[in-house]
Image 1 (cartoon, one colour):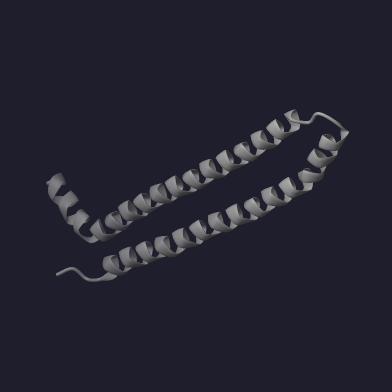
Image 2: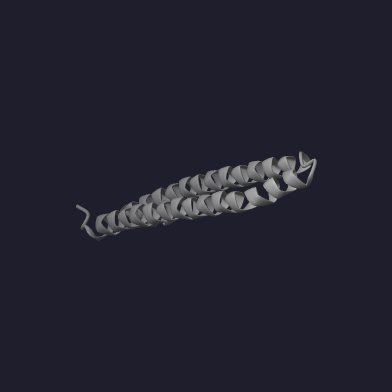
Length: 117
C-alpha cells in the first residue's frame, strides 16, 4: 500500500524532479566553468607577477631601475585590462546560467501543470 501511494505521487511530480536534476546538472557545469575561468585567471596573474619579479632581478644600474619602474605602469594597465575582461567573461557565464536555469524551471513547471492522462 505505501509503495502504491509513492508510485501515484511520483507520476505528477516526475517533470519537476527531472527539472530539478537538470538544474543541478546545469549548476555543476556552471560551477566547473567558473572555476576553470578563475584558475586560468590566477595562473595568468601569477605568470605576470613572476615575469615582473624576474625583470626586477635583472636591474643592474640606475638606468635599468628607471626602465623597470617605467614599465610598472604598463604592467598595471595590462593587469587592469585583464581583470575587466575576466569580469566580463564571468558576467556572461552568469547571464547564460540564468537564461538556461529559467528555461529548465519553466519547462518543468509547464510539464507539471499539464494534466496527466
